[in-house]
Length: 157
Image 1 (spheres, rainbow, N blue to C red):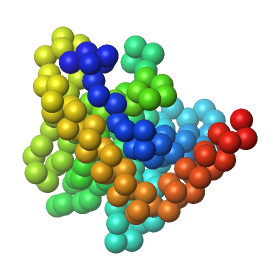
Image 2 (cartoon, rainbow, N blue to C red):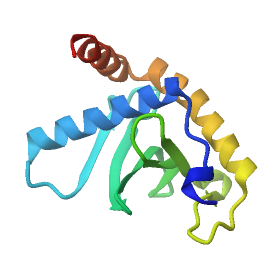
Image 3 (tube, rainbow, N blue to C red):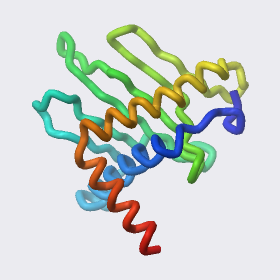
């Protein structure tokens, strides 16, 4: 599947994931302006809901790639529950391309330079991101706060 054929996450989900990205960039720039490893854990350890880990993976072809994941530990190993990776092509084009759920043995990579991927499954992943985003907002008050701040910034621009 080529990038221009991929389905983006919904506008509502995009707002949630962009808030998480903004929080990550804000924290890492405060901690170390020279940092090359960029990630953040959103949420409090030990709470009944899992923290959201947001990580900048790399730039490829001029587009940033990010990982969003919940983790738990099983037999000493970090288990993704789930991990979703996205390509950022700018406003309205946050494209989920990778899904992994370790406990179920599921791993799907929907982006291939050769275009040999399943389109309908990538659309399902984009739709799932909408449901997951709603859950993340309900679980992580910091995401709500950052989204409100982003709305305020847009209204004052």
